[in-house]
Length: 595
Image (cartoon, rainbow, N blue to C red; front, side, top):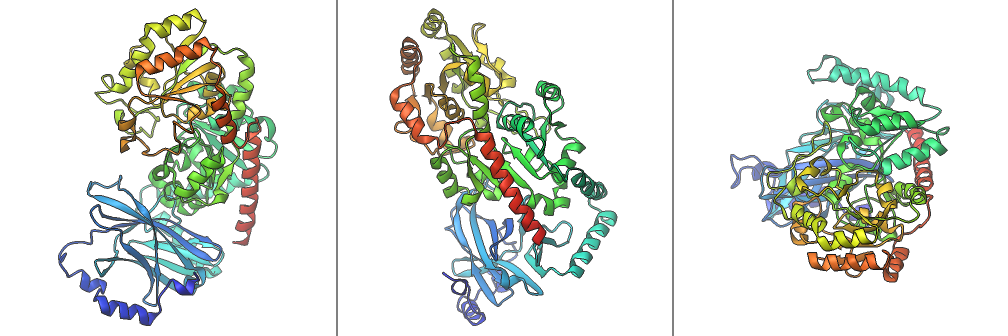
């Protein structure tokens, strides 16, 4: 369908207005007279892609309402219908009766690249066309109403987001200079908190970028309080193999053991999390590589991001992943929420699943394999005959508080110790049959807590004979002969080593009720998983004892599934990630030079 087919002429637009009698001012005086419009919209992203302005957004609607028709109007001349991308829960709303309808809209660049144009958003509901007068803008959007300035999004186009419209202006040198002067005046004499510090940061960015011009700065991280994941694995590889091409830097809280360890044994820079150095280098770096999907690393500016929208929207963010994606996390990691430039995947099935739900293009999804797979390959040489049975469940969001952005911690709720989660794994470690058979065959039983749970491990009340294994994941897997898992994607890593795993899902209904971070999985545990699925304690014990008797050898059917799933089965994943990033950034440099 061509663009001439998706918008109406001025005459058609007027006819439609007359037919439905839905002038937005008149509609405000209908049955909702005296009330503000209930619908609120969020403009998450605005990008120029191949001569098209693409807008990603969402609008808040009542849960009992059907999906609305959404459209953008360019003045009163042309109307561009938006594509309905589905309805999701409105987690950020105080009203439990509302949901979010996602939409995208594509507008030819030629339509808005004239001297000055305005876009307004309208909703069609029950035959009535209503103008949305309350629009906010996402954290990764290039524009917002806070400073009242335009942002350059292409060679010839500037945009400014306002609460009730999006303004477009052709970019001439005179306008760019005037807009920049207005920015400096707003920062110096405005009343926004932190504006003067932000202006100094702006000036410092130019000097920092000049310093790293020959060897661009790449920032990497895992968690705030812990390394040892894909971020550190990639960081170590770059330090050892490519530190003459780029400058690697790793971010972690300064009051952690891993900060001291990395500071002593690495060639790259170790940056204290949350420091001014961290924020300035984030704004100045060429790319951010993170195994954590939180804003703390992908945009660690807090409320001051409003002063740097143009930089943040163009920042190259590569998600190294915390594990192979087998669940739908699009509400957390989708393009509207994180605007990732690169998303690491390990299999075609995983890549296709993300492509169908997260809003990214095929170019954003890098089929390379995860960085820590390489680290596991090195560590296995240290454990030629692994003698550990590791229990490694994921956490439960509904049993813990929200994330503390300062130190990355979470507190447990009052019912944590009495939860089925704690009781099930305590019962497993206390089973006398398991203890006797493991001791007889020279196996150690270890519990590897999720990082969110580690600080509260005492709540499980494990016996002294249970090892609490908090080593880096690669080392834990290298020394493990059999893994007891529940839903964690870490089991995929372990299977990469052709070792057996058992999935113990005693609370499946509660876990997938929506109370945790995801509600659906891209895996059929009975037909496609790399190990057996069990729901009962007795069934699990019998299966573990059988594996012990057979020297924890993986069964042929699961070995075949592993071979079919992973696209690569070598230890060159870091090299592929580096090459993908280097290619993306070289293309980006060419595009920036055009602008």
